Length: 192
Image 1 (cartoon, rainbow, N blue to C red):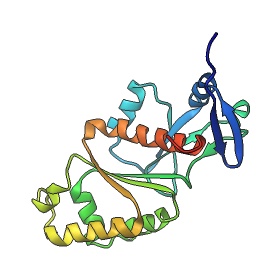
Image 2: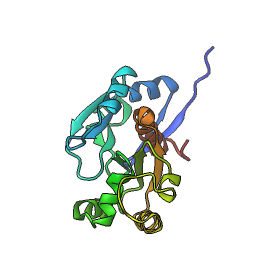
Image 3: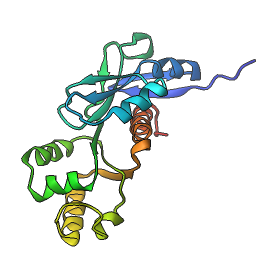
Image 4: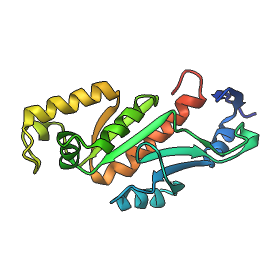
């Protein structure tokens, strides 16, 4: 006789107990959202397609990626549920893009950071570099290494985001894993 595994799920004041089969069903309603303004993200979308990860384009107020659960009343989601208060993922193509944002005091970038303050889980994912690349000035901008590093770390502290450096070929997987992890932390008591 098969052993039933129950997981307590609480989402937006909805509390249910799901078996592993039901959790699998819930995940079939999981969709990664990518911002319609996101540029140069074909490598991310190709990864999603290759791995059969459902995704759709939508205008996001904050960040480049998020996720939703499609309406599935039998799983406790009577309507499409977006996790915009729980997650924000901002992707940057490299150190020069960030240098341009913070050195020039890019108003749009700093407004985005201000909106991120009220979101539970915020990530800044930077492609194809390492933090050491700032110290070693492995970027095109003339922004001083020490000033750049201090400013970036200060912005990170004030805006309360996780900064991760990711190889371009791994970006799609990283975005998916962050979305999946936040979903699990929201629906399973005590997180994952």
